[in-house]
Every structure is written in structure tokens, then in C-alpha cells.
Length: 289
Length: 282
Image (tube, rainbow over all chains, first blue to last red):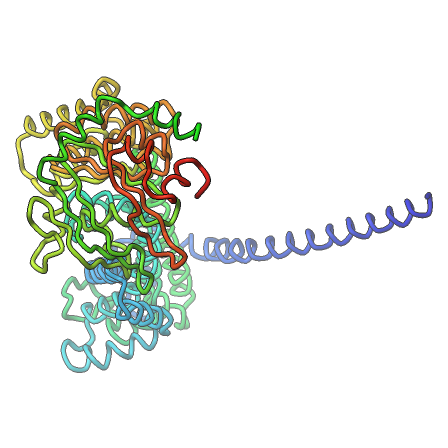
């Protein structure tokens, strides 16, 4: 019997050892992934924070070799193009998701779903080339509108796919309750299904806006960039990612610092947007339950 | 036979005389050669059934006999499920609701439905749940009109006294039994002529179940009520007429026997009905 117990104890020991080993591996992997994010953000903060001052937010960029100035046109351009892109992409993306889920018994809906998936996986530079060939060359030239369209193409599949997943969470019993009251299907979707998923809907829209805010490649080929204030969608428009790119490849230390500053601002913008939506949707859920 | 006798005791005696009288009336719903399918699967076959006004008609039978499919065909909710369709005639007041030009949306406004699981709208208050059908399909009425309908419907559903002080609470904050009566009030608010209930008490405790049954008894004067239930005592207690459905080896549900509830429970004519009622089947 004691021999048996020894063998059992030995097995237990080795089992505990291997459990501890794998637990350690998991901890290391987790620390690594979190620390990568931490290193990036702290690096951006250290390098970029000194660039943030009043001029940075309000002035246009200075010409080569001059110190000072800011990136105000890029901030304005990014906000305008994101707004226009969202206005285009939200109805199209949400409507596509509604078609797939609410009217989706057909083979056509499956095909649409597949197309949306392909669109989501398209490299963003390809989207830029597509808008360049179609819109920039034929219609508007380099313009804020072309940039907005490129961003909208990026946003549509993100919205469509995430809204599709959210709509699928709505139980059929809810749709049946409304249908059984003699409600046409479009009213069921608009007045019953959509209000039920509104918080999730806003979250997925914000997700797509955050993704589009950082896109650089499609804007290089469409909105081009601009060193001056421009509110006209028909003309080239500045954007924060473009400003970061052109400052980062310049030979001036002052511009490098401004590139870091713009990066910090972009990250803060995206963080505030998604954090704000999370906060409001949580309060919303709290109130309605 | 002892079980059958005990079931017979449950049957409400006064409602049976009523049943035989009312049967001389015109049927409210005539189901003729009705077949329903889920894709290739043939769910119910050749159903012929007359349902009378002023009575509670129960549809009973073992799981998978097509009783839920049957009731969903009466307001064209069957076809809402992907791939489902029905063929045949369901004639309500002389009008075939499966005619080519019949509009399922209009039909459903005349025929209310209550489902197995209480399904109040989670984003709406008690008050807004009751008048949801009106808000959706008769918008822009005066507030006093909505208030009136809400109170009348909640009273009819025997819920008014319990919720009159929390009309602005979310509908989902009520208890399960209250939620189900809220769903009945919601169905009554659009003033249907027919009320379909698909196992309305199967998710409820016995007290809440009895409340629902009493409610049906008080509503049947005004409405034609069809009740699907897997609970035989409930059919015996709450219904005047009973239709027994059963699926054969081929999984197609058929109507086996139909008649006054008393007759079905005391003198079933078909051996299969007797076996089911006495608990030897299903």
C-alpha cells in the first residue's frame, strides 16, 4: 500500500507541476499582449504630449523650416469626412443587415452576406484605388467627398456584419408578438426590432467610425491632404492620418513631435468615442431593465 | 377507467349544455381540407374542423401532433416561419383567409394570438405594451382613447387591479403570470373577434394557470376562443369543445376526434383518444 501511495503522490506532483507550467505560459502571453499596448501608448504619450498646445489645435501647419503651427485643418477634415462617411454608410450598412436577417430566407440573402464578408476583407488600399479610379479620375478630382466615399466603403461591411449579429440576438417570439397584432413586417423591424437593439446598434456604428478614423491608405488616393482650412467637399481635404504620415516622413524634429501629437490625439478621439458610447449604452440598458 | 371518471368530474357541468345549444349556431371558423408543411415535412394532413362562437375550443394531443401548427394556421402565423406554408381553406365568417387576395396583416388584426412563453415588448412599459397594436397600426389617436383602451383591456384580462399603479413600469418587470395576462390584454386591445392561445399556461405555476383559465371562461361570451394545451385537466376544466390530434407513423398530424369536451373525456369514440386521455399514450 505505501508503494502505491508513493506512486500516486508522484503522479499528483507531476500533474501539479504541468498545471503550474501551463498557467505560467498563459500569464506570460497575457502580460506580453497587454504590455505591447502599454508600450505603444506610453511611447506615443511620451513623444507626443509636448506637441499638444493651443496652437496645435487651432493653427494651420507652418511651411517647411518654420517652427510652430498646428494641425487644425486635419482635425476639421477628419471630422467632416467621418461625418459624411457615416451618413452614407449607416443607412446602407443597417439596411443590408436588415435585409439579411429580417428578409433573409432566400439564396439572395446568403449571396449578399458572402459579398459583405468579402468587402470587409478587402485591403483598404484597394478601396482607395477603386474610389480613385471611379470618382477621383472621372468626377471630382482629389476631394473630401472622394475621401468620405472611401471611408464609407470601409465602414459599410463593418456596420452590416456587426448589426447582423445583433439582429440575430432578437428572439423570434418578439417579432411574432408584433406580427400577430396585425403589424406589417417593415413596421415590426422599424418600431419593435430596432428599438430593442438600439444600444448595440450605436456600439457597432461607433466601432466602424473608430476603424475609419485611422485609415490612411484610402485617403492618400482620394482626399490627398491640404495644408489649409477647407470645408468644401469638392476640394482636397486634410485628415489626421494623412498629416501624421507626411510629418512622420519629413526630416524635421518639430514635425516628428507633431506627428506623435497627432497620433496621440487620434487615439484619444477614438477612445473617447467608444468609451462614451459604452457609457451611454450601459446607462440606457440600466434604465430600460 | 378510474382516471377517465376523475377527468369527467373536472368538466364544468353548466358549460356542456351550453355547448350543445351553441352548436346549432353557424360556426365562426370552418377549416376545410387544411394541410400545412415545414419545407418538405408534411405537418398536418386534411384537417376539417368547425369552431363555434361563444365557446372555448381546446386542441389537445401528444407532442408533435401538429396542434400548434393547426392554431397558427388560423391567423396565418404559420407561414411566418422560414419555409412553412399551408394549403386548403380556413373560412372565417364565410371568408376564406387563404384566398389569393386575402391580406394576412388584416386577418391578424381580427384574430388575436397569445403565445406559449409570455413575450411582452422588453423596451415598452406595461401601458405601452397594451396599446402597442394600436400605436403600430392606428397611430395618432387622442391620449384619452389610448387610456380608455388600455384600462378596458387590462380589466378584461383581469390585470387592472394588479398593475394600475405601475403602468409605467417595464412590461418585463411583472411576474410570469402577469406578463401572460398582459399579453392577453395586448391581444384584446385591438378588439379581435377570435382569440387564439397556444399553450398559454405551460410556462406558469398552478395559481397563475387557474387565473388564466378563469379569464378564458369570462371572455368566451364575447370571443371565439381556441386553446392549444398539452394539459388534459386544463382542456377538461376550461373548454366546451375538444379536438384530439395525433400524428401517425408517418409523423403527419391528423384530427382523430372532435366533439363536446364531456363526450371526449367520458365517452371517447376512438380507441386512440381513450388511450391518450387515460394516460396510456403520449
